[in-house]
Image 1: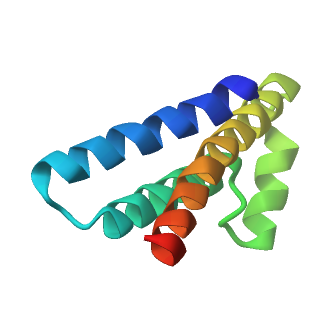
Image 2: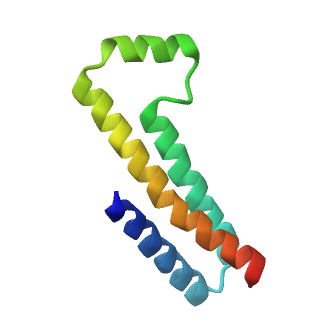
Length: 94
């Protein structure tokens, strides 16, 4: 889990450097990266489906699949947190 947070900081740093070199608005890029990471987490976890579809998914998948989905969704959300933090710092203080 610490690796995911560190990965989020590294991703933020890479995006900031790329935006500086390309002279692009870093707020837009960081917010887009945050939305993509959260969207991937929702897609992997299956939380963005209707209730009956979620019930069917939970009934048919194995414990290993459930564990994989939960672990990867949490890791993506933890990677998205530093990206959001850097976005907020830039938005309010720069």
